[in-house]
Each structure stands twice: as structure tokens, then as C-alpha cells.
Image (cartoon, rainbow, N blue to C red; front, side, top):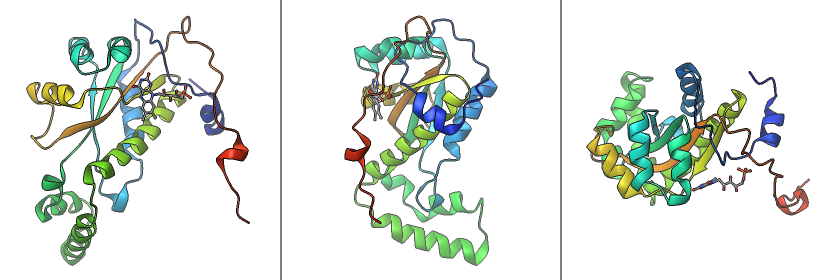
Length: 215
Ligand SMILES: Cc1cc2nc3c(=O)[nH]c(=O)nc-3n(C[C@H](O)[C@H](O)[C@H](O)COP(=O)(O)O)c2cc1C
């Protein structure tokens, strides 16, 4: 188990290039990593992202074959778990019924009604709801990736996937809640191959070019 603090983890983390072909990761660890995503912040706390976590080798192979760019296929096959970050479409999410269902877990009575009306109005002002959900997927995946590192595993954020193919598969496999749910980001997590993982030097813009401190 890692004893690094968050600053060490942020400094030392690199994206996994090669995963260990023989993964030996406990389900508990995977659930802890996913839980970090659940605890990420979301706009007005409405939690727009759900995670489908695929550990089944046959299904990972199927996803790798058509759902990802060729350069990402091997990672999908070899990693322990492929995470699909899914979200709903605006037409489905943005109904008072859906909002009431979500919010009733926390609020009751007049407070619930007040929040449903308020959030309904707020969400209606969001022009690009898909983009709004995508930004939540990135945020959620950051929490996930850092927790994976914290538990001695590694992660790869994967934008190189083919949404239509992955969405066909999750619908075919009955993994999506309904026809409105779509994959908007993906990620691999697992043990990296220590023999093949290059000791990468972080390439980043210099701090002086990255920020301006206004005192
Ligand atoms: C939105 C996003 C999409 C990415 N897509 C891919 C991808 O498709 N395949 C891949 O191998 N890495 C992917 N990466 C990882 C980046 O290539 C990597 O983070 C970057 O080169 C910096 O390296 P580091 O993560 O090791 O610091 C992605 C990262 C982000 C944030």
C-alpha cells in the first residue's frame, strides 16, 4: 500500500502505457476507486455521471475490438477494469419527475419542491447539456485516477474511443439504464507493467507560463 501523500501522488503520477497482463486487483480496491468518483463535486450536487465498470475479460475484448482507437485497444484488453463514464440526455434528465426522484433522497416536502423548481430553472439555462455532463466526467475521472494511484495502481484517461460503438455494446449487453444513457468518457485502471512502463519525465509548461498571481 502506498504511503505517499497527495502532493507526492500528483507529482509522481503518469498515465499507464502498458498494463500488467496478469492483473491481481481486489474488487474492494476497485470499489474504493469508484467511490472516489462518486464523492467528486457536481453542479448543484445533482451527480450527472454514473460509472459502468467492466472487469469481464470477454466484454473488455469486445469493447477493445470496435469501441476504441487501435492505439488504445491493448490497454483496454490488459487493464483490470475499463470504466465507462455515462450520463443521460437533457430530454430525459431535465424533467421534474427525474429531479424529484434524485433530490427526494436528500430533501422532503416544501424544501424538495423548492429545490426541484429552482434546479429545473437553472438546468434549463444550460445550452450545451452534453458538454456540461462531459466536464463532470472529467472531474469525476480525476478523483478516480488519483485514488487509483493512492492504492498503488495506475490509470489512463482515454478520450480515444468510439462513442457510437461503445453505446451499442452497453445497450446490447443491457448495461445502460435506458436509451438515453450514453458513454461520454472512458478510463482504464489496473496494475501497470513495471518492466515496460517508461520512467517518464513530466512535460509541462513552466510554472511562470501557467499562472499569473494577482495580489
Ligand atoms: C481528456 C483526455 C483524453 C486522453 N486520451 C488518451 C487516449 O485516448 N489514449 C491515451 O493513451 N492517453 C490519453 N490521455 C492521457 C494523456 O495522453 C496524458 O495524460 C498526457 O500525455 C500527459 O501525460 P501524463 O498523464 O503521464 O502526465 C488522455 C488524457 C486526457 C485528460
